Each structure stands twice: as C-alpha cells, then as structure tokens.
Image 1 (spheres, helix red, strand yellow):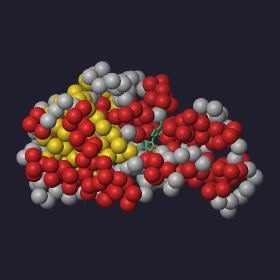
Image 2: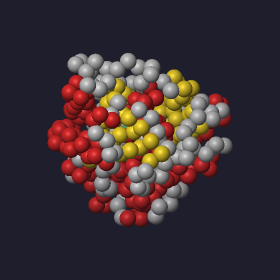
Image 3: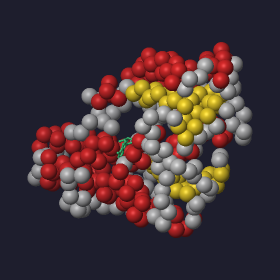
Image 4: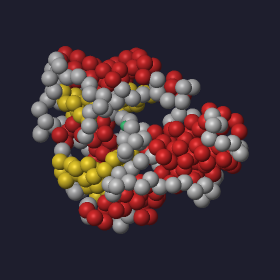
Length: 352
Ligand code: KG4
Ligand code: ZN
C-alpha cells in the first residue's frame, strides 16, 4: 500500500511517499526557516504563505522522486494537528482537494504521534538515510521531544497508548530555542546550542532540576529563567538586565559554558524520566522521536543510562517530515475510518 503523506504544521512543507508504512520511496521537505530567522521564531503568517507557494511543487516532486504516478497511490495522509492554524489549513485543504479530485481515501493523523512512526521506517533506496535496522517492538516506550512537545508515552500496540507524563510548561525544544536566543544563536536553537556546548564546561553553572509530583513529568520554564539569571550574573548585572542585550556582553567562552550547562540540565531531566520508566515498565523497545531526538548528547546519554539501546532515526526524519505522517496512516488505516473529504478541518490543539 502506497501512501502520500502531507505535512504542514509549522514551517516545513513536506510530502513523502511510503510503502507499507516502512519503505521510504521519497521525502521532500521545503522549509521557510530562512524567512523566520531574523525574528528568532516562526512567524505564522509568513509560514502559511510559504506553504501555499510551495505545497504543490513539493507534492509533485515527492511523486516524481518515488517514480510514482497517481494511479499507484492508494491513499493520502495529512497532519490534522497540533500546529499553527494557518499552516495546518494549507495542508488539510490541499489534501482534501487532491483526495476528491484523484478519488483517494484520506487519513488525518496526529503530528506528535506521527513523530514516533518515523522509527518504523526501516527501508529505503534513497541516498543518505541512516535508518534503524529493526522496527520497534511493543510494548514500546517513546520519548517524544520537539519544539512543541515533551512527553513519555507507552505504546502497547498501534493506536493503543498511554501518556505517562508530559511537560507542565515549555517543551524542551522551546527551551533550547529560547536559550539560543539569549546567546544570540540562530533559530532553531538545538543545533547551535549543541555545537557551542562542545566547547564549554557542562559543570560551569549549577542549574536546578525541576521538582515535580508526577514521576514522568517535565518542566523547562524554570530552567530557562535560571539560565537567564546565571547569564546576567556572569556579566555582573542583576535581574533587570534585558536578555536581548546578553549576546553582545557575553564572550564566546561564557556562551559555550552556558550552552553546555543548559544542555546537561535539560538532558538530565529527559534521561532520568526515561530511565525510571524503563525500569518500571520493562518495554521491549525504547524510541526517541521529534526534533530534539537529533541531539547527539541525548542519544549518547540514553545509550549510557538505559539497559536497552534506544532506537532513533536519521536526523531528516527526526525533524518535521511527511514520511512519518504516511507511516502512521498505514498502521492506523485498518482501525480508522477515512476522513470526510468535504469537512475535515485542522485542529491546532489536537491532543494525543
Ligand atoms: O519536531 P520538530 O522539527 O518540530 C516540532 O514539531 O516542534 O522539532 C524542532 C525542535 C526545535 O526546538 C529545535 O531547536 C530542536 O527540535 N532541535 C534540537 C536539535 N535539532 C533540532 N534540539 C537539540 N539538539 C539538536 N541537535
Ligand atoms: Zn514536529
């Protein structure tokens, strides 16, 4: 079964063709990132306009790269939410129109759940994809960490899962992005924090771990504030000093130390909760999913601390992509009824 996936929840417009949920035939990702960089975060209106401009060529390229024409496509899958309303609308309306005009069933999927399914893609003839050798087995513990989400989920089977815990406030990727902004690094912050952290001392600044009632819960908002206070103190200023002026006052060594200390504290929280859940629940597989799963530090720490090697996939499938949308739709299509092509609407706050 060949599914065309369409993803447009944030700043990436993506289309992909995946066969039987595991064989990646094509994956095209067009990002409007460059247009947002000067603002230090995604500007929703710019993202939506950019989706509109590139979505059709992106889909055409995904079909061409897969060596497929419309007759070979069995279904269309699209991200229904969560995400930015204007961005989601472009993907959903395009998918609805194509499903009607090409007479294909349409499946609407949850973006956060789909991140986990990037790890079910194990085959491709495409160049430059480092894929996991085996699919995850159930019960499967998933650490989903992105710019919008931080949660630990136990999958008992496809479509049968339990959320063990999630963030009370900021997502971990959001904390990376905000700390990067304080240091004057470009958006998104993850890759630049990781790069700077390699030159810094992770013990330089003592940052607190959030104390929470729930064993598998996270909180990253306090950590972000603690980083701000530490940065102000490093340059001899008090809490009234504006964060926007920090990049010009901190030197490179101080920035590296802040990045390294922040990364250590953020990863510690994720690794501790994942290790605790692993011991308690004894999963057969552990997967890391979402943009922050691209973090080399997170991968190494989890490998060190867990009794079971975690599964993660190619960086290109960790950040937003349509291949994961097509894969999830394949594993869910037998339990879900196809969406109504005349009424499907996006759900910006869709929960798992
Ligand atoms: O999954 P994703 O592409 O978009 C969302 O659905 O949010 O995740 C983007 C997030 C950003 O916050 C970015 O800073 C983070 O993933 N990220 C990283 C790394 N690469 C991307 N965080 C830590 N280390 C990285 N190497
Ligand atoms: Zn995402």
